[in-house]
Structure formats: structure tokens, C-alpha cells
Image (cartoon, rainbow, N blue to C red; front, side, top):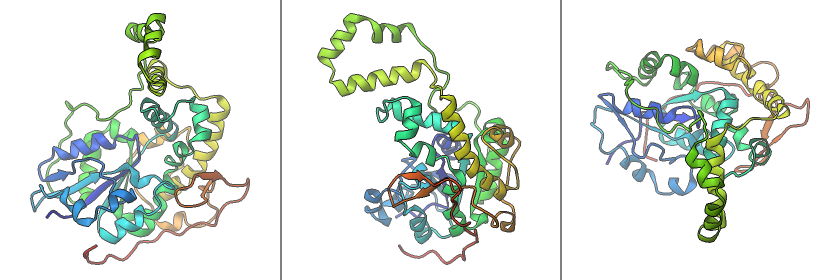
Length: 338
């Protein structure tokens, strides 16, 4: 029977986790899970399969190899509230990698991802109101708090999508040092980016013909169930034009994200906002600073609060923030049976 992983890419969703997973998989001495996202610690039905099932994912690895997996569900609070505790129970010494991206760009990519799959069929502005997870999964400081408390700063590596794109070899070497890889990693520039929602959106003659010709519209109505018609139209809508946020939505998102980014920036010793995110991220890499630099004062991440496990997050009353949560390292204990 295999063993558990030595490291996990925990997110964020739509931040090149699939690309990094595949680049690590081709390095000699590293073994990456198949499937890429087992979601063992997050999804209750998968966790119920048991520890032996999870370890079996890594049973093909050489005994000297470092093993990893990449489940973005692990940073999807409040949807999966038990993830951190489960990882801490089974893998107290695991190394965690967290990739962050311009939060508004991440949100739009997430929206396209859900629209193409038929889970969302409203405008991006309506989706923000109806699907708060689009915003919640981009509150990076809030998603990281429990991990930093459970595993300490030394157990969590912050990676920025923008710096990874600009300096892939440098970031790959940094990531490999963090996980304890002693080989000489090489970024394969011939490998296509994995699982990337197309954001260079365009119209095509084929698209216009399929969607708009009246005869084909009538045929679709007769032969294709209505829900599939809606999904079909949603897919073509998202691949014909990039969704544009209304100015008031952008303003509101800036306010929400900037509150969280203020806390993230304090943890990293940088000033970062939605407007400056790409510039600051590209100038990385950035590392955690001493806890004293950010545990005092109000909680800039208090724009959202969890109301109940697996329930949506709601906007907190204006001017009301929860007290700051201290971040501290946890003691390391010997890994035992689950």
C-alpha cells in the first residue's frame, strides 16, 4: 500500500494549479497523483472511502520519490469546512503550496468555468450576487488563516500566478526547494498550459451559423432537451465575448478584495490592492514576514464571515469586523495511523 503525499497544491482554483501539477509530474524523483484532484480531505463522500483508499493513489511511486497532489477544493471555504483539520490529522508534516492570482481575473475565469459547465447561466454581475463562492474563493488571506495556524508559516508556500507565468523556471526551483526536492528541476516550455479556460475569446463563422440560423434553431428545439439548449447557448456565449463587469460591481469587488488583500499584504510585508495586484505579484517572489507585523489591529479581511458550515458567506455590517486571529506555528508530531 502506498503512503500519503509529502506536499499538496491546495489552490486556488483557476490559478494554474493543473499546469504546475503537470510540470512537477515530469521531474525525476517526483510522483504526482492521478487523478490530479482527489479532493479526499474536503469532500465528505470521498473522505468516507478511508485512508487506505487515499494512500492507494500514490502506490505507484518509488519509495524514494516525493509525492504530491493538487486539490483546489482544499481552499474553498466555507463550502468545505473540515479540510484543514483532516489534513492536520493525517499529514501533520505535509508541505502546502498556495497559488494566488489577481482576484477579479480569478473570479471571471471561475465564472467562465462554471458557465461552460452549465452551472451558471446568468450574467457575471448577477452571478456575483447569486453565487458568493465566486468571491469567497478569492479571499486569499481568509482561505489561508487556518492553514497558517495549523502548519505555521514554514509549512505554507505563497506563490503568485503572475510571477509564475513571468518566471516559471525560477518559481519551479523555489517550489522544489520548499518541498525538499534535491534534483535539478526543469520547466518544460513545450508543454501547453493545462486546464486553462480560454480568455482570448472570439466569434467564429461556425458559431454564428450554429447558434443563429433559424432552421438549426428549430431543429435544436425539437431534438435537444431544453436544459441542454440553455447549456449550449451559455457555452457559446462565454466563448464569443469576455464578460464585462458593471462599474458598480467592480467597485464593490475592489472594496471586498482590498480588505482581504490588506491582511495578505501585511503577512507578506507588501502593500497590495486589487488595482496593484498584478504589478506587486509579478515583482515577487514574496515570503511570509514575522507574525508581529500583522497580528495587531483590526481585521481587514472582515468583509465576509462564515454563518454556518457549508452555508454561504454574507456581507458583515458596515464598520463591524471580527477580532484579529493570531497566527502561530503548530508543533510537529510523528505521523501515525488515521
